[in-house]
Length: 219
Ligand code: DX5
Ligand code: ZN
Image (cartoon, rainbow, N blue to C red; front, side):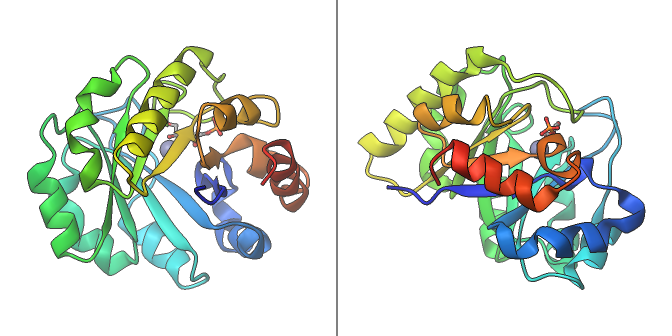
């Protein structure tokens, strides 16, 4: 069975106190989910490499970099230098991700693919072998604090089935609207990595929020 992991999304953290917010939860989570947005692939801006490099100075946590950008392949060296670990790119940006995968791996990064709510699993199906993680979006990317879309659960289930059928060790991640109420549904669909922004950093006690999520999914 794949390890259950909680991946706090720093998008919901207080950026003026980002270091402190990360240090507070660091011992309680497996990785940090970092949402990079370019105002082009998604209608919002978030943060980029200088911020990633700064937070790398305060933690050794695994950095799961969710690139909601139109040309993440052009910035792989910057990401490596800043301390990123996983390059997660949208299949909508790279219908054939072979080249960007090669570039990521050659640069020492792990590689992941992301599917938007409207994109069928068939889009990533031929490329799952390239991935250490597949991310099924449970909101339209671009903003934190949106409601979980239960209609993506069947897609998550399809994805877990095809990962298992091929005997692969690929993490299945869900991102958007994850709470103590929605995480168990995703867990039942075979998800093992849970991104949560508002549910963790929006809480008065982020450490307790992580524990609550873990309890809800039996991890
Ligand atoms: C949305 C981002 C998410 C976001 C999740 O585009 O990919 O990672 O931070 O936020 P919540 O958990 O608040 O839905
Ligand atoms: Zn994300």
